[in-house]
Length: 489
Ligand SMILES: [Zn+2]
Image (tube, rainbow, N blue to C red; front, side, top):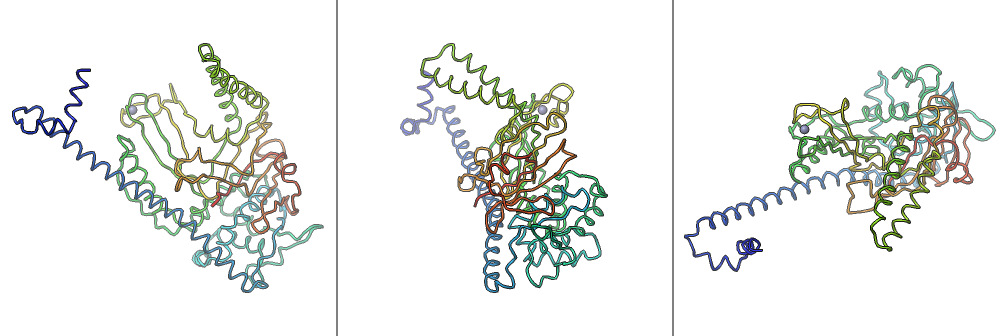
């Protein structure tokens, strides 16, 4: 109590007035001066933090603005289209893609990508694409093949890219033969050579990365600021983030990075260092290994229920009732997990779990200069306009895992950066599903939401048809493998 009084005395402005004249009390004066210096330092620090925060907000706004520009361009395109609707209106699309030798993985992937409105508009109407093609006309260029495909799936009269030779008809519809595209990817990447079945995930990866490389306007000028990733205070964290965003935007400027790239935030804690290390990285899809997701979630909830039942021993009846309710809900969830059922939010929980590295797997700490047990956690810092999720089933028995997914997901709790504190909602616009024994074998088909009429269509190679009941035909059907979600504006 006495000490507390002392403190009050030091900081009370009233006392200060009275003792201000007492010049003899030197230790008191020193403390007062220190206090003044501290206050000044704190003020400066606050100023620094707010400057950095403003910078970060600016960068994030620039990223978001790009999106708004795309939307604006889209509406301009819409006006142009309506002006001369007969000539320019792309015909309603539900066109299949011919299977030209185990290419169902390619067809399903291309269908999903070619229904992303921002991507279609860019490849149909932006001059930049033509410039890239012209510059690379003697080399292999995926941009040209992708534009060719988009033009033929979304035909407008008079387009130089229309190729009637590759249009055929089955009992339902016309379909396109993606021969040129297949030839191009085979030539550019040996993975896609020949007629063996391939993994749709590898192709999405290849297309997104290659188109980004070809369309990137940046001359890659990384600014090396030699910023340490150890955070001593809030200013450091803002500095690391600002440095990352600045470099990212210097190095990456394409329609692909605008649409598909998000940012992850990782936190590494060495068991000896007092402070965690932080890092930011770009990503363009999230990979969820479903069997690991199931096991992680099962362990987590089982442990949670154990804790609840231990707590119950010394609790008042009201709290006990709440506890019991959660306990019962958890039991139901445990049963689902034991029956090989996970849902999309289990995957996001798994994604931000704390990973421990001990013993042989200990991580090297560049501060302690040795291998030490550490933990590692990945958070989503900012989420892209189109979020691609890969549901990895592995092979064999794991393949039996049933995945519950939704046409609308709220990721507000899983994303750190929220512009104006808005909720972060995504709508499903495309699914690559898989039928058969494992990731490598079987048949791929796609279901996509048409940006023109908002209806769902199913694409099974050359066949394309409207989906009458999405729940029974798509949601509870086959094995979803790659999900395409679109962020709501
Ligand atoms: Zn360390």
